[in-house]
Length: 542
Image (cartoon, rainbow, N blue to C red; front, top):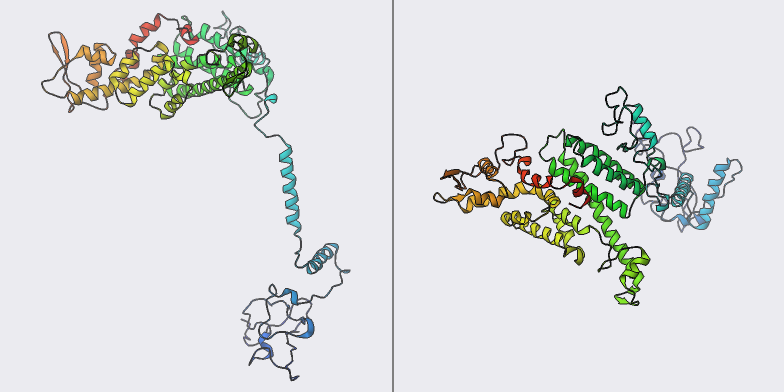
């Protein structure tokens, strides 16, 4: 407070002199010609500026203008936004104002004439113009990250490894021993063998252009590289240990898939590469099961196997759709009606696509659909995918057998599952093997509760047959789960008891979480595999 609460503040608005206080004085007259106050019982100071600094700032002198006709209504002056049209704003001389103020003043006057048009905001207009310009640029520019198919890079490297990478790795001593020139392995700086060099995988880095055509290999060269890795490296009996072989082949196959992704490869060569990659990863998951993490990581192997399987199955679907459309156009069939009697063999010769009885290309789709279901046993998404397959794929022997095993697994019938598993071929058992320990544990749990009796004994050889194990392996498995065993007249007996059964087995060593190691459980299958060459298995002939 300024010490004078009952006195008005000094000073006025813009253009007022010091000490000059201008008040609004109504000039209305009564009908009898005498002046009277605007409010009943009020004085002229009722509409003066606020006293005692109650409002903080002065109110603008808005009501000092006379209304049209020189009359004002009784009571408080109406708000400006409600009766703006009743007041007249005098014209002002703009000659003494700057250009920008003149423009704004002209807009105000135009607004009064047009009935309320507001003053343009210069900053809003600039932002709007900028946004419109950016929108037009975005529409004109091509979308970043998704290029048209014509702009995808195409590889021109016709060797398994680009020449520049061979020189760099040789100079930096980054050659694998499988790629060194014979006789220079023990030298201070080994030499590279161009015939054995394979492009290694490298992560994308900032400033590194991975789309150079000279560093990318076409699909035919990629297939040739994969065949070399399978025949000369993975199937070699002289390159040991096999865990090192797996590490080398795994890295080079990863680089092959990287080149395919950059080039958006598709077609028969792409599918052939993915087929061999999936078979190799399945075989490795079976052969290296139970190895230390330093030598084999099952999680990483599973991730790459799932990605390759998804890519391969999607390629099969697209290829079948394309071949079906080609077959339909070639035979003139539309909406199920045939307009041409030309045989399918003639159509296949003209279109260059081998068409089968169902208008599709003969391939290995049934094999890998079954492998996908066996490897992801119990997965609802994969089971739904298989049930939605075309009839000619779903009714094949491999898929039908995989569906039977999946049904037994969902019904918790381990006896039937293990019996059906014995009819699978080697690669299908490789896909199913990681689910077998769980099935064996379920079988022991069911028998421990169903045959739990003091006077009941179950023959050990028969139980070993049900578990698809040897008698020694069955004994170790029963001991790990707490199932009592007995020996009578040279024959082993099992005394099931639900009180002694242990859900979590007690393993004595690493990799023996189920009572027996994976390598020990695979001895029987590995003996069968020794009769078949690894190259034939990966190429799909085993």
